[in-house]
Length: 99
Image 1: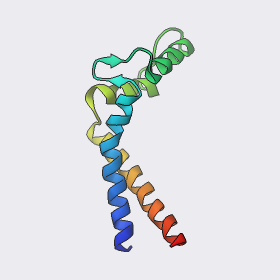
Image 2: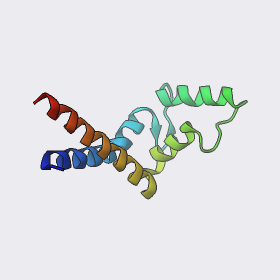
Image 3: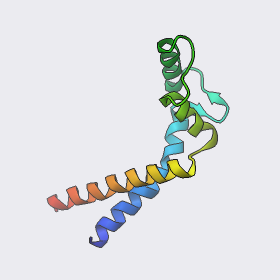
Image 4: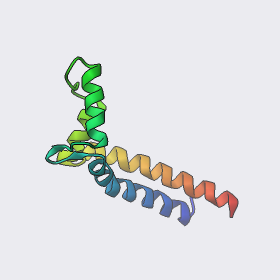
């Protein structure tokens, strides 16, 4: 593995861990709850209608609200960093084919 791939993996891992809370908050999943008129409120409404009035524990809406309220857990940070690193490495490899 060359240094550019290592750099791509590192950048992908660090970038996704840093940006995940920002993106989740921008979507409307905030520490104070779901923001009115946001994508999060639309998702919550759709999930509640689909589940007979409530949002199921462990659903995407519940997980994203947890991240918005408390941030990423240790396990979630590991998963997000792993996926981001894999994508970063793959992007570097793909771009290197064209250079």
